Structures are given as structure tokens and as C-alpha cells.
Length: 562
Image 1 (spheres, one colour):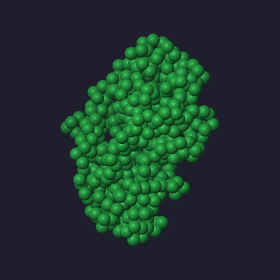
Image 2 (cartoon, rainbow, N blue to C red):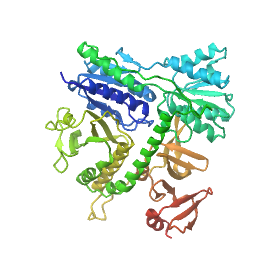
Image 3 (cartoon, one colour):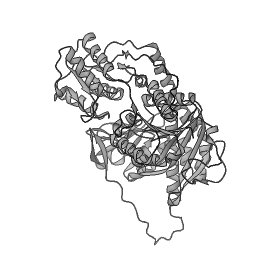
Image 4 (cartoon, helix red, strand yellow):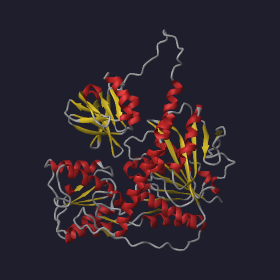
């Protein structure tokens, strides 16, 4: 029997999902199993495009069992339901679900009711809160967290009318909407808000502060999960620490028992408890969490430094063929740390998948076609190179160009280094594809080249919906914390696109990139001012200013004729 476990997960950028996977990998290694992980790349987008195709690569005959992280699909519940239906129809393997199973598979999940009672009691007993809201989740799905919240209020004889529970799924938009309604007086200002996840809580803190509220002086906020608190650099969050490693390890234990009929040695569970942070007014952040915070900040700074020094953005931009792109992958794959294997598979004509690159194994040879559902060429025994393998899509708009496979020896998860690397790789593949499709210079003057009409509007996020925004209203596009915003006279609206995608779609006669983080509407320029550092300050009609960086000055001066 093969000892390869198939792991299906939405994505691994949140710390909680990464810890589930680390627990799975550690336990699988201890019991002699290999793990192959299938994951999407950008699960935080409203439109997933064709990223779900990564799960079509799964050949169930190659695995002994499946672990499905259902709760990782909470923001896109319908996607998780479709995958579970497919497992029921196509797979005859043992399946263990982390979360809740719609198809009757054995499942395991962490206890949420009692921890939420403890968290709510803290707000009531230690901070004397009486008007407390609960934020997140869906009405259609039973939640131990909401049950715990209601039970805690009831035990203190505090009313909990239905309007104190604000549903809205697991997207940050539900936090933005609640903050807006509090600020506009549509709902009563609460003493505290307890959120179903840390991500919702972070967004609520941010949105309330944007409306002028002080946290925790005006409103106290708490999240839930415990480990994601390390990502907040401005205010440590009060939350509840969950032992995600244990749940992941127990999923492997359950699967092993189903496969062998034997119960392996038990897994020790860490103590779960409240982490008291500044968002409720306690500020008693444990030293361990502070250390995690500084380590995460240091890792992000290191990531930024490595990528800036590598010149990866310009390296892929100059590629004229797929072979050039693979040469850059060979040169720059050191940017993905801790891996023991990195491979790139690309689609050719007729949807055939070919392996173009495998670190240290296939670097300068011709591409090899992949047959019969193989993830890598048959002669390459990747299980000797790594103990677990992660498969991620290379996607652009509604297309999947191929897949990146990354192997690790240690029980680690892919992180921002890998995601940034795949983003730049995608950019390089799209650019060389466009270069290949350009007409040759000797095309006769009489030949009319059809032009794609320029985009006249974009869809931007507005609460839980998407709103149509005419481009004539946009002053500039700006990247802030890796999110792209369209800035108008009335405000800034987030859009689900990368800067290079916008450059491809926008009319070059109307919009021009003036720095790594800004694309400017040329029709909104009021005046120009040269700066002593050889940049140009641009004043816009709305009195705001942007700067043209030195790398973009020549193109800007030619375009505006200065």
C-alpha cells in the first residue's frame, strides 16, 4: 500500500492553517507517511478564477487516504462543498475532515464553545462590558462560538437580542460594515465586540480607528484563534490560543487507524488559554508571543530585502521566451527558502502539461511531457528529495498557465517568499507570451492590426458587493500593504488586481505608471514640481500629490512632453 496522504487545503497564508499543516506533517512523518498538498495561491480574492483547477490534478489512485481541511474554505463555503461532493463521488479512499463534513466523513475540530464562554466572561467580569456584539459567521451554519457567546451573556443576566449578533461570513467586509454602521449611528455603540476570527477582529480595529474611535478606550475588541496575533504590528490582539498542531496530528491519527486498524501512541495537547492584548485594555502580551511578533517582522523585512536585491522583477520582464524564464527560475529559486525541490509545469497546446524545470534535476534539458496524471516525470523519485510536496497554480485572470511544485524535508509550509516568487514568475510568462504574439516589424502598412478596446470601467469592492467604477473618476491607482486601490475624489476603493494586470488593461494614453506603487491618470494632473532628489512631484486636480520615481522619469517626461 502506498503511504502517501493527499491533503486538500484552500491556502496556507493564515497562521492557523499553517499550524494545522505542520501538525499533519509532523505526525505523518512519525508514522511513516508522505504528504502531497494541493492548495490555491490567492484564496483571499472574491473571484477565484480557475484556481480551483489545481484540485483536478489529484489522481486518487496514487494515495492511501485524504485529509480535507474543510474549515480553511470558510470564506468560500460553496467551494469546499463542491470538493467534498467530488470526494464522495470519485474517491473510494478513507477521508478525514478537519472541520464539519456535509457528506458524513469522519471529522475533527477544535472545541469553540467553552473558549468563547471564557473570552466573553473576560469582557464582562474584568472590563464590566454590558453591551457586547458578536461578529462573523453565517446564519445557516451552527457555531459553537456563537452558542458560547450567548450562554455567557445569559449566565450574567445580560440581554442578547438577535441584533447583537452580526453575521457576515468570514470576510473582513463584515468588520468594515459594522464599523461604518456604528460610526453613522445606524447601530448602538457597544462596549465590546467579540469576533469569530482574528482577521475579522484586526479589520474591525483598523476600521473603527479610521472613523476616529480609540481602541480599547471607546470600544474593546477580541478575536479568536490565538496564533494570528503575531501578524499585528500596531496593537496586539486579545484572542484565544487554539492548539491547531494537535488537531492536525489527530487527523493523521484517525486516518492511520482507519487504514491499519491500529491506534498509535497518543499526541500531547498544549494548554489552550486567553491571550490578553491591547485591544481589550489588558496589554499583558506573553513573552512567547512578543518573540513570535519580532520574528515575523524580521522575516518580512528579510523577504523584502532579498527580493529587492535580487532584481527579480526586471529579470523576468526582460525574458523573450519560456526558456529565458526558466533560466531566471534556475538563477533565482534561492529566493524560496527551506525547499529541497522546486519544479515548474506549464500547459502547452491542447492542454498538455509539460515539466520545464526541476531544481538540481532538470535545469538545462528540454521540457518533458507529463502523462497519466503524473505530477513530475516518472524517472524522478521526488519522495527521496522531500517528505512533503505542495502543488500551487500559476494563474492569470481566468487562466491557469501551469503549476509550481515545492518539496520540503521539514514539516514547514510555503510562505510569502514563495508567493512573491510565483507572482513574478507569472508576470514573466505573461510578458513573454505577449512578446511572442506581437506582429513582426515587416508587416505591411496596409495590414490593419485589430485593437482591443481599452477598459472603460473596473469593478471595485464596496462592502459585500462589487461596484462598477468608471475610469474617468480615478485619479490614480496605488498599492498599500500589497492591496491595490483606485483613488477617486470621493475615496479609495480596493480592487482585486495586481499593478501589472492594470497596466495591461488600462489605456496607455490615459494612464501611466510613475512608481512601483502608483499608476497615474494623466488627465488629472494640475501641475509639476521638480525635486532636489531628481524626482518629480505631481499635484493633482483634487489637491493631492504623487511622486514620479527616478526609474520612471524618462517615460513620464516623454508622455507629458516636459
